[in-house]
Image 1 (cartoon, helix red, strand yellow):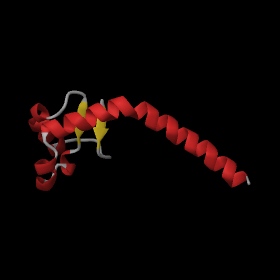
Image 2 (cartoon, helix red, strand yellow):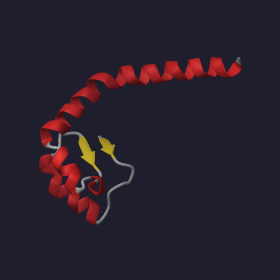
Image 3 (cartoon, helix red, strand yellow):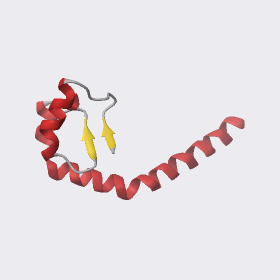
Length: 79
């Protein structure tokens, strides 16, 4: 399961997460601290579903491109 946000949820954060669980896309957890009132206005269930679909569809290509970029950068660094 992917986690959006850096911290592991414990205590109150875990309780908030559990309360929000019905609003989230299956397989995705969002750090409750990231869900500010402003974020909640923008990050509707539909938006989160779209972002998740795009990530699942494009992440493999994104990771490949980043790896290729790293190889090119190493060549540049070597002269």
